[in-house]
Image 1 (cartoon, helix red, strand yellow):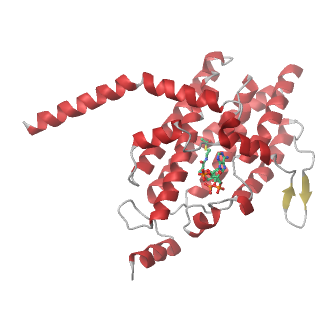
Image 2: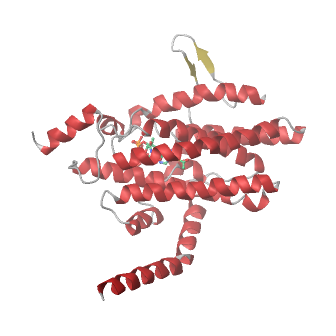
Image 3: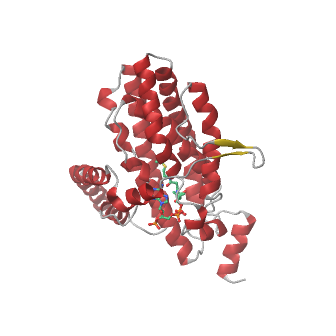
Length: 309
Ligand code: ACO
């Protein structure tokens, strides 16, 4: 059996591919692309909510938000570690993010304007992320699949805390309910865009499905999210932002309105509301952290030379 045949045998048998196993070059490259972009999304995703930590309405809310944002940072580091097992360095990953070679989730280029957005982001953005990530727990690359298991547990807490904010606001004063509705209106469609282009337009899907990197397609995952969100909006007593939403008895799913794909491509190509600001902030934070990296390297070198003596 050739290495390639053995690789495909493992994929078909549902076995995990581990870092030292033989793998096709394109499988490695595609994983580096997807996992690194996933990691970048977690890291850049700290910014819209980080912006609200100092303005949280109570100590309890502040503590929860702080720990959620820290979790996202942890997810990013987990994913960077997973992608480093494929033979790329952290420096190369960061450079790709900062120079725009690597993408990150479109959603994080939308500004967080109100406290209601903390609810909508936790509920819808983390909710959409979970739908995708639950399926990625079964991805074929071992380190990625294992990272997803832990990350999903934490995302589930994030989703609930966001929904709880929405429940509180929608049961509050008229102004609070209006704030919840406004956040839902602004984040609903961008959350649907998180699943990527239609399957017919998705450059990587066919190969990623064959290699079991992706276990469900962009459109199938998006449909799951649409279906599960309808009831949640009803419970909040808010209006659904999609006027074309309709139950389709035959399909057993909701039909829904068309996404604004011009907006999606504009945002992923760097022209969203906050793209420039997000990267500038990352560059600044990275430069300000240089002394920490220097101290770590000095400590490592000191330990190494002590061992050699
Ligand atoms: N935001 C930014 N870029 C996107 C998005 C999006 N929502 N959806 C698709 N793209 C990009 C792809 O990265 C790809 O660009 P590239 O070739 O430069 O890498 C291009 O659009 C074409 O899309 P697809 O062929 O459909 O790409 P892919 O097969 O990678 O599917 C998906 C996209 C579904 C996002 C996949 O990469 C994935 O499941 N990633 C892991 C999950 C993830 O990254 N989640 C991010 C949010 S998690 C959080 O909340 C922090």
